[in-house]
Length: 73
Image (cartoon, rainbow, N blue to C red; front, side, top):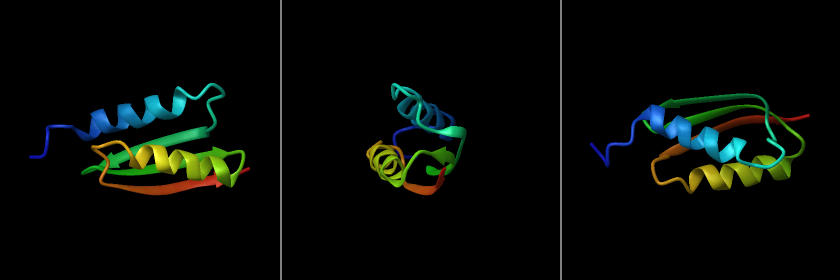
């Protein structure tokens, strides 16, 4: 059972992490979570943002894996 973090809570945590960035870096943001696996979709300015968001999301304790489908503009 883990520590009771639901997919909905993980999605909320990921959404908060992304939208708390000052300039909200993702256009057309899509977040889905299935059994702790996060799928991320949308567009960002550059690959550095893709890498930075990937690192931060994977640091969340409830995220098992990240399927990062972000694209650069």
